[in-house]
Image 1: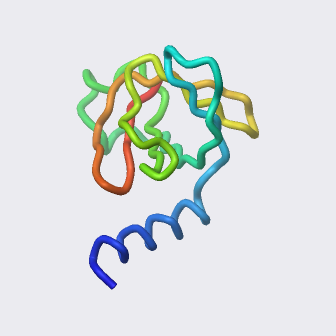
Image 2: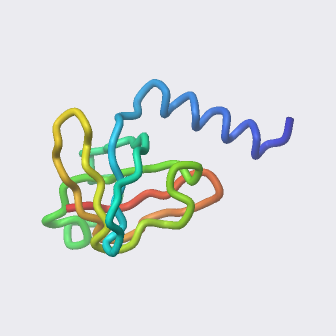
Length: 103
């Protein structure tokens, strides 16, 4: 096994335990894509007050679910609650997952 495959296996385990079902919709698309996301409401770790003011959460999604980083105004709808989050900007993106700030 390589470090990257170990990292992917760990990420998949985290999504299995803490992930929630959601639907991803690109801002100019007409159909939704089912995904698993991790929603983090503790925004203090993601920036100073000016950066995160007015934002609702941070959503992380696997690259295997959404290949390209989400863009501003793309949406995630949480299946269980039907709450819709709108992407404000990408915070992090790597070979395993994308992390976005949402309103």
